Length: 285
Image (tube, rainbow, N blue to C red; front, side):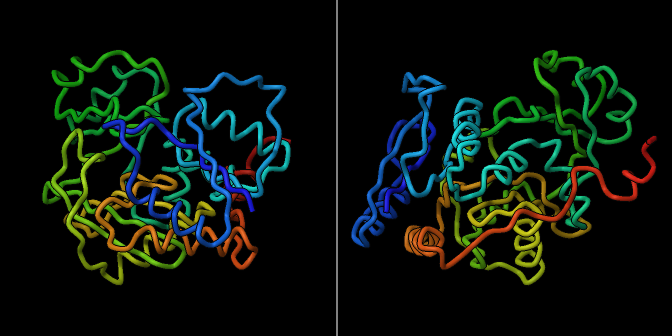
């Protein structure tokens, strides 16, 4: 079977040791592995065709998502499913879906005009994120109107959520099917590139993590959790993360990919609608 991994440029520009190990395991099991970074190729959009048995989207860039969409329209098989990845990448959709599924997530707002947040930021600190951002790019934490005024005018829609007070550490939760792992590391602008310290997963966090997968239709995914005064809160979710710091991550990932590729596992898209039924019933005919 032929697998194609759609990768992202790494920072620093070295191959992921977790992925390289997973590639070795899969190759030994008879899979043909091909990889590509969308930004480093010149492709004809009308010449892109399905040539692999399974595609694995490991990039969150706009170009990768668009190329994945072209392949999806032609019937390509994806792990994670393409619609699930798009929903997870769009923080506006994701924030609504988390709350709709009853998963603890912060109160959120969406806007293209940050001046509209003045009354909110005077009530409580806010976190401002590009709606399709990744790797922490473009995130601002503001505590008052003066700090809000220093944030550059957005060039894309922004998701804004209330700041959740925690210990200053990130609890990174990683999921492979039903296996749930976690690491802790100090929060910083570059923490996405650093491994964390493995830690135990509480029953509550495990349940939250698995409910996220069910809500989005994901099998390989991660979430950022803040352990605040009201318990664990999910502040971000992403598909096919790096699994940095997770012991034996490559083994679990390779097993899951093999099972999915060979049809021993499946992922169903969630039954949640973009607009809850009670709201659909209120729309004018």
